[in-house]
Amino acid sequence: MKIALVGYGKMGKMIESLAHEYGGEVVLRLDEFNNADQVMMTPEHFADVDVAIEFTTPHTAVGNILKLAELGVPTVVGTTGWLDELPRVEAFVQEKAGTLVWSPNFSIGVNLFFAAVKQLSARMEDFPEYGAWAWEIHHSAKKDAPSGTLKMAVEQMRRGGYTREVSESSNRAGAVPGTHEIGFDTAADTITLRHTARSREGFARGALKAAQWVKGKTGVYEFGEILFG
Ligand SMILES: NC(=O)c1ccc[n+]([C@@H]2O[C@H](COP(=O)([O-])OP(=O)(O)OC[C@H]3O[C@@H](n4cnc5c(N)ncnc54)[C@H](OP(=O)(O)O)[C@@H]3O)[C@@H](O)[C@H]2O)c1
Image 1: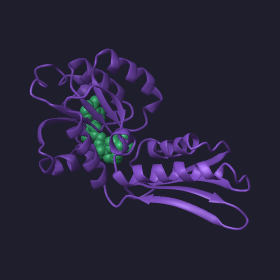
Image 2: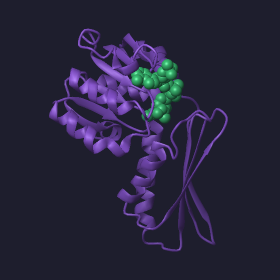
Image 3: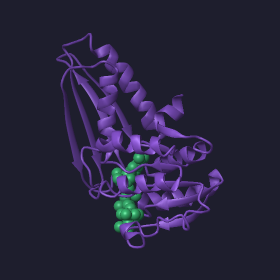
Image 4: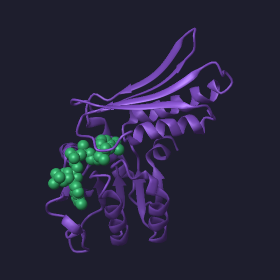
């Protein structure tokens, strides 16, 4: 599996360090300096590439995904902060008969957390005495807030059928790789579901699993669909 890393920051480097465990070889590394105005995104540079893994910035991700779809390169995108544009991106990728796997969070544990949030939220709709919150904390360099993962966790509450207000908040401090919490509270008790990432390794492994999976596929998929069918 020949991989192009579009975005060679903390995530790109972590993916590179683990790629060999997934039969992957990184053949191209693009960052802000060598890829200004997408100069490196040409058919020649991508001729040998089987899959692109995109972890860049909220500002650049959409342009990169559209360009990769034009080039016919299956893409795994982990960048957050652009998902408001998903409908437009999805339509473009479908039109090009391309392949895209996206997720605000590629860790297996967070996707299990999402499943638990959805299930508990479905029950909570019948108990109006509970109020709900959604909270996350990340390192101080993270550009978007609230995180894409927190938005997805609240979306899981909605998919579970929870219609009441959810109080959302975010913190940015230090080097935290990412902690997400959903809580329900009454006068009698508190229930919390919390996922704590210990490092970026879990995100990188999930992205590499998705990169293996795209071979021979077309369409647009959220990572959870791949994991749980
Ligand atoms: N889905 C998940 O599981 C998951 C997990 C962790 C992080 N994330 C998200 O992934 C994104 C990247 O995170 P990170 O921690 O790796 O950030 P980072 O260390 O800041 O890396 C971002 C990289 O993108 C590069 N870049 C900027 N514009 C580019 C362009 N036009 N073409 C190619 N590369 C470009 C930057 O280049 P320079 O180094 O030259 O500036 C940098 O290397 C963020 O949105 C973050 O929230 C998602």
